[in-house]
Length: 142
Image 1 (cartoon, helix red, strand yellow):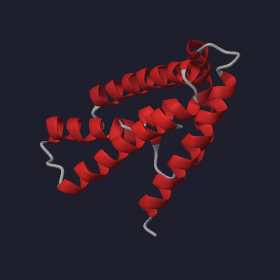
Image 2 (cartoon, helix red, strand yellow):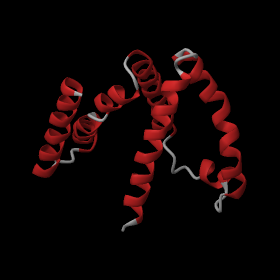
Image 3 (cartoon, rainbow, N blue to C red):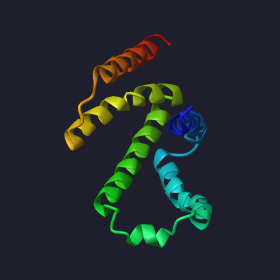
Image 4 (cartoon, rainbow, N blue to C red):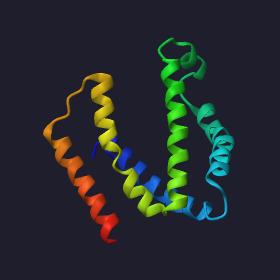
C-alpha cells in the first residue's frame, strides 16, 4: 500500500481516538480551556521532532520558500477548527460531531476550486454525495 494511504489511515484512526478521549475530557473541562492547554503543551511535544529532524529548522525557516502569511492563516484556521470541534463534541458527543465534521471534503473541493482552479472529477461528487447521505442516515437513525 502506498505510504500516503498509510499516513491517511493513521490520521483517521488517531483522530477517532482523539475525539473519543476529547469527549471524556470535555465532560469536566471547558472547550476553551482544552484549546489553551493544547496550545501550551503542543510545543513541548514537538521538541523531540525538532532535535531529531534530519533537516535544519533554521534552513527551513530562512529558505524563503515558506509563505508566512499562509502559515499564519492556516494556524489561525486550525485553532478555529479545534475551537469548533471541541464545542461540537461538548454539546453533541464525539460520534455525532465527527459525523457532521466528516463533511469537510465538500469544503476542500470548493476551496481547491476557488484557490487553485482545480476541477474535481465526477468521482469526487459521487464520493462526496455518499459521505453526505451516510452522515444524514447516521445522524437521523442512529
